[in-house]
Amino acid sequence: MNFENIIIKYGTPAYIFNIDELIKRVEYLNSKLSFPLVYAVKANTFIIKELENYVERYEICSNGEYEICDKLQIKDEMMVISGVNKEEDKIAKMIKDKNILKYTVESLNQFALLQRLAKENKKIVHLLLRLTSGNQFGITKEEVKKIINDYDHEYIVIDGLEYFSGTQKHNLNIIEKEINDLNNFINELENDFNFPIKEIEYGPGLPVYYFQDNEFLEDEFLIKLNELLKTFKIKVSLEIGRSIASSCGYYLTRVVDLKSNQNGNFAILDGGINHLVYYGQMMAMKIPYFDLISSKDCSEKKVYNLCGSLCTINDILVKNIELKELKIGDTFIFKNVGAYSVTEGISLFLSRDLPKVILYKNNKCYLVRDTYKTSNLNFPNVVEE
Ligand SMILES: Cc1ncc(COP(=O)(O)O)c(C=O)c1O
Image (cartoon, rainbow, N blue to C red; front, top):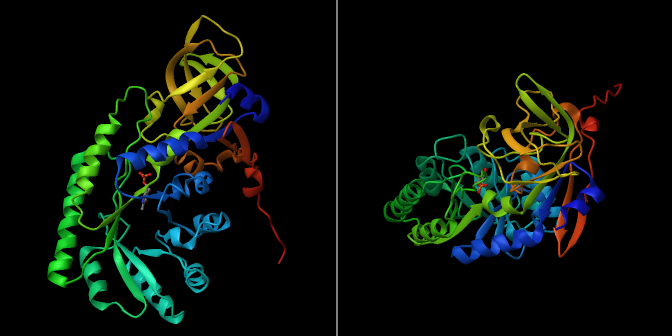
């Protein structure tokens, strides 16, 4: 990838998602893990279609995510409709018009809704019951048992469980404990309720190491994880977002102003925390992986705070970093931004334009979203009644 040419052609700020790298990444995960992947599309919706041949299915958590997948012609058989707040009119339409693979159950009310809609439409609906880890997601073990005792066998098929308790799990002991607990519960359902759970969709929250002081022996981690997962004696699929998507993403942002005061040197960039989200980047104290394209080479070094374009003192991407003296126009290429930055940033703040999104594939760039004016979204369109 020639970033200089990309910057000249497309300008900044922009995201580039390198699809060749994405495919290598997902092939790597598939080579280390003997269980099929479910891509959690919330991590990055721009790469959904590219993953079609590498994942078993997609985890879709809102009607918006569903609309994107549907427009991309993702097959119904690859969709798992998940998420809290399953809107009745939207779900009713899906059940009526589509043959979606599965729906997750996040509450007893959701279960009742899905069961009623299945019956009304005389459609068989497959369910994964999401077990809670104690937050607002999923249902308790008691509620799982209640559903298993009461459900309408004519239209509802309970395929199994879904479990996801959080992201960035660096500690395999935590994962091991989760897997043991899940296995115990699966055995309990089988032995005490005579209910064989056929499958589990498990989100291990695979970690991504974003900062330069981290070391991560990923091969080892994945081999151990794979062994732990083998203790499930049922079908397992792995619901993953961050670890699939992060490494393919680059964020380009240019120095637009430079200044110094009693607290240091400040480079103002044309991007910021509205576009770039590094998990664990507290107070911008850590140094993410990045390259710098300088217009002029300069031997003098200075310590900078790299700030974004928002009106908040929190808009700092990196604090106290020593760099060759910066010039206006120098461009930073922040790495590992393929997951969540493009979907999770506080992108409406200050009505800054949304960055371009470029997919890079087989030595070619494809502009898949142009700069988007959020001032249109933040404008009060008053219509006289
Ligand atoms: C239910 C569920 N599954 C999977 C994921 C993906 O997690 P990660 O990006 O850590 O793989 C999330 C992330 O929030 C989630 O909420």
